[in-house]
Amino acid sequence: MLLAMRVPAHAGDDTQKSAAPPSSETSDVPPDPVVGASLCPLPNAVWQELVTLVPSEHLVSRLRGPATARPSIQVEDLGTAFRISVLDRAREYREEARDCAYRAKVAALFAALIIDPAALLNTALCERPPCEPASAPAPPAPPAQVERRTAPTIPPRPLVRIEFGPAVVTGLGGEARAAHWGGVLRIALGRGTVAAVLGAAGLWPAETRIGGLRLQQWRLPMDLGIRATGSISRIDFYGELGLAFALLSERALDLASARSPIGMELGGRVALGARLARWARFAPFLSLQADFFPDPPSVSSLPEGAAGRTPYVWIGAYVGASWGI
Image (cartoon, rainbow, N blue to C red; front, side, top):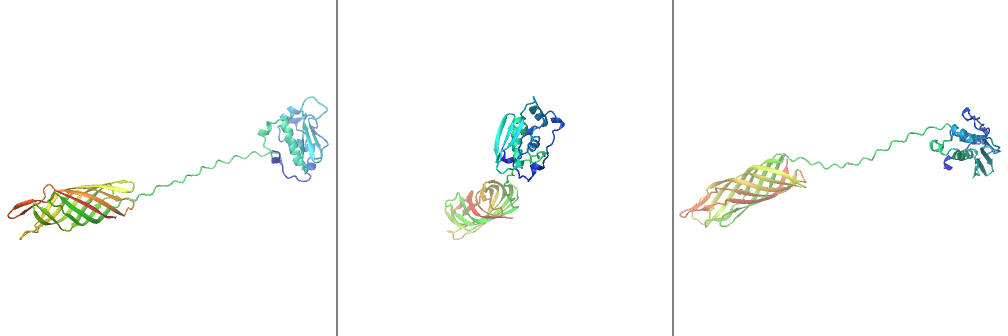
């Protein structure tokens, strides 16, 4: 606490200070409140420092009283040290540099602690009177703004999505099932969760049997419907519901004379699919579908007559890539 009060002293500070007579407010203070034959610090310098630390009314109330032969405050210069006595309490401080201004401050501080220690709690220590009021504390720094990590913007679904890839389709209900291989092309129109969808597949002919007849079967399936899409994590799942129709041709392979009339199938279609949603424009997909035909075309031969019908249900699987526009 004492070191915080030390400031560089200018030569002759004590000798240039003149003892200021007590004000009218301290007229009741005994004459020569600080005495002593000390040259460093001077008694007047100690008094001038003391009046900046303790209010005048407190000095009056503590230092006045019955006159005694011994003054209330005494200061002694001991060369490399000095001694200060206040109201029968004394303290010796060692100060070899003989900084008189610093000694006066230390002596005044000791006297203030004896006379009115509570005053030091409300009085700001300064180098020279009058003390300047303490500056207002700086406003607290605003809390650091937390960096907000915005979620990556999900681009809107394309208005038109074109899907293409290989396909395999097989019919259920014949004596021998035949798998038709080929390709599929589908177009979905709409940005929302519900979109219109149109598809067509081109399939290679395949051999099959209906009613004991060995036939070469050819199909061109098409469909029209709606698609509802939902997303889970990075995958788009969708379901489709619509109409299915196909052009169908059956040609007997074991008959001497055979015709290949073209029939038409008409029914309903359901499908389920999944597409990676990570890429908005280009994404792979997988789809499974089933076409139901309540009245499939019949197959007949002469002279036996009707041999049977084409399958009621066609199951297909598509895999490929989709391109959004």
